[in-house]
Image (tube, rainbow, N blue to C red; front, side, top):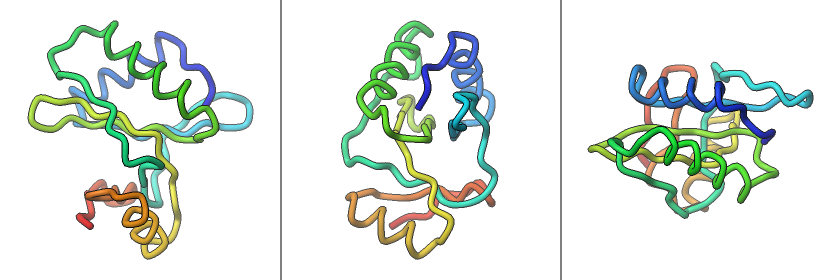
Length: 122
């Protein structure tokens, strides 16, 4: 994923608190967009978390840490649950069964349906 500007990271931070989460993908030119279909599946069983009341700078550092560690990913997902912010390097998979299979293989508890905005428990 391309390096995100501070303004772009601020939009992600806002999306967490206003919408409960986000998924963004990068284009070949380095710009980002919000996918509207497919299934977001984490590429790793490792969790990247921080308290929801942490300041913006801590969030920005975590975004940079995750994007640096998983530089070949093309998408990033984030959500908030029970006072914790989660960030995942994700792969967007178009077919639901393939996404479920990938999620199970990667030891995920759930995947996210981008078309309906709902979580699918595995």
